[in-house]
Image (cartoon, rainbow, N blue to C red; front, side):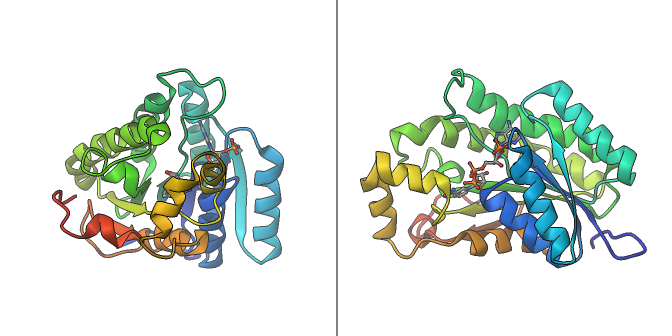
Length: 254
Ligand SMILES: NC(=O)c1ccc[n+]([C@@H]2O[C@H](COP(=O)([O-])OP(=O)(O)OC[C@H]3O[C@@H](n4cnc5c(N)ncnc54)[C@H](OP(=O)(O)O)[C@@H]3O)[C@@H](O)[C@H]2O)c1
């Protein structure tokens, strides 16, 4: 079951949607008729250009700046959505980071674990029965502790896995409120800034992934994230995109 208003439109918040996978997910969901709230941290012009292009294509979008690692900022984000729309039907937890210049040693955990839980706790009281939360992650994070991770990605992988664990622990209380959590995990996604940077800094890490097969594209991954917002699968279900070698003989069932 999913929720929609009388016009059949869901209110969707996508964190970190000013570029990359979040931006493409916004385009895909707007094309199916959702109103997408494009959250960004600092790239307001880029977020506005995306919202304009969605509207130009006949869709519905607005932008909302907020650093989701900042408690006041994220409280204002949720309050603004409630004030404007009265509810939130879909929350896509896409924003991620930790390797930014000037980021302190605790920032990855603060963003990828603590901020995810805080946002969910703030949003859920405004999510009607039948709403959906989608946590976006990478295979390197999802399988953290079970598969090797390049050294420079270790803090991200560990913190995103910790974030996923915290959210999974919330599944019973989310179910009680009629909100389903789904996880979408991807291999390295071709064409993203992160993979372009990695190709410069540690080309062997990218080549090693390409040796296992063609990397998924941003559109393929964003489409999977979008489908997870309507999937009939049970809460806690994980959709895997690319990286079949991660799945062969996996020891954890999450
Ligand atoms: N790239 C990959 O190969 C890959 C593979 C598998 C999974 N994923 C997952 O897909 C998701 C998106 O990845 P991506 O490569 O598209 O990311 P990206 O290009 O680095 O974009 C990150 C987005 O998050 C926003 N952001 C960063 N910190 C934020 C904060 N504190 N508060 C609010 N927004 C913040 C950025 O906004 P500003 O630009 O305004 O700062 C930007 O829109 C992540 O969860 C990632 O783990 C990525």
